[in-house]
Length: 91
Image (cartoon, rainbow, N blue to C red; front, top):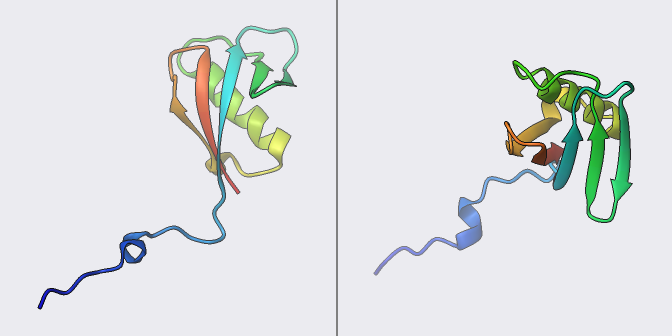
């Protein structure tokens, strides 16, 4: 007789983690940083140049302040070199 495992027994998700994915449109080299929510995405003006990952680091910092979470809980999933990014947020 075979030993069948339940499909949910292989999942390792924690109850305290809440993952949210957000589409973000980044505008680097802005005079002032700001975040505007529109429909299903965020428009973020970043006051850092899009060179040497400076704008991405500043984006993570701004989003962590905006949502009131640690910078370690904000991750760029897709669009490292693009202005349109997919951001994953853990709470």
